[in-house]
Length: 255
Image (cartoon, rainbow, N blue to C red; front, top):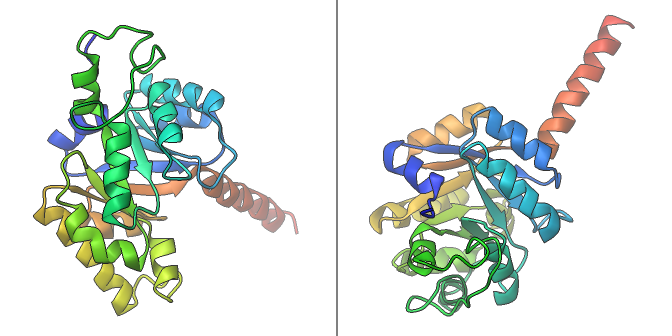
């Protein structure tokens, strides 16, 4: 069975793809999002207690609906990134990639030779030891994303965007605006200019630009701006918002 990446296939035929951050450690939530038609989910290890034993079931739930699960690791560390790939992740979002050394380190860790130094294993990723063609397929199918979310990363984004093996640069607007001294003020000229700089670096160098949003209107605005990978929600945030609306509505009807 050939290893495929549904996200790459969708990006080849669609102008944009929609996704969500999943911080709930819930395979059920992943399944529901896939059932509703999302293209991908980002499994958030950075800001949740999510571990690998739960993550593998979340990846399976995504695959059942032709959706790609992309773990966001919590550190640039070789063993962690490789273990995530060994359980079958077809993508990887790496936060705080700030320097060219960071960027090269990540690519070296996640690619098999001759592109990197990833080692062989007999886990779920290589189909329990079915190595025929796996190395080349894995190098081709893996969707690698760097997160640009600091001024230092911004200074290096043009050079990073030239790297072979990198597929996408994803903007963490919250941390980027915080690092620039304008937390969550995405209309600030400096922050807006930084977002444009990252977008332009991606377009110029054939990388796919991605960004986080929180509303349908914000998502549409970013898509029209030229972003092709767009997250539209966090599952826990959505649960909080919708449950609060239900509670408030009942109280309003029964004062």
